[in-house]
Amino acid sequence: MIQLQDLSRTYASDEIETTALNGIDLAVEAGEFVAIMGPSGCGKSTLLNIIGTIDRPTDGRYLFEGADIARAPEAELAKLRRDRLGFVFQSFNLIDELTIAENVALGLAYRTMPAREKKDRVAAAMDRVGIAHRQRHHPHQLSGGQQQRAAIARAIVGEPRLILADEPTGNLDTENGAQVMDILGQLNAEGATIVMVTHSPSHADIAKRTVHMLDGRILSSARRAA
Image (tube, rainbow, N blue to C red; front, side):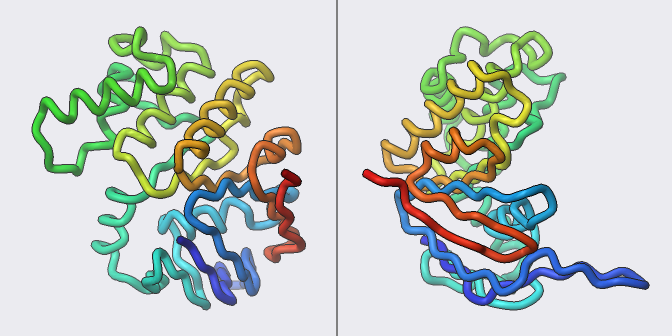
């Protein structure tokens, strides 16, 4: 599904050039669950942002389902994000003025479909993560764990090919973090491809493969023992 080839990302200011990623080679197959680990500042989130087409590489190739999109027009990347990608963030990124159902429906905001189908998809996504009973509530009325479940529902309502999760349990306690990981594990078992950045070794163990990074490079990539 994903193939990164000699991919680099640098950021330049008037006085200094910073290398965030340096010569990354990484392939992710459809149906994999990959955890990316490493110390703060090692390039994990930059790598995830490039995979999610939120950022662009300075050099190298990024093949998504065989097409090189490293320098694709923004309109093409926006369509890819809309149709094939789902995002889960550490800070939930819910809109407090909207109900949970309305927040989840944002995952379909740019899709053309009948209102009934959109409503059914939103209901199914909320039910899938166990928050259907909270659909009329607002984010501030939910616990952190419930807010992250709502964020996952928003990410999956469009039935994306790839789910990208950036520290999805970073703002949660142990119990709620475990519940979120159970949901991600179930989604992967049902066929979703997931790439997740995490600092938690126990949560990385749920993935099928763990990639370790340091100073903008990949140090190792190991599959979990069966």
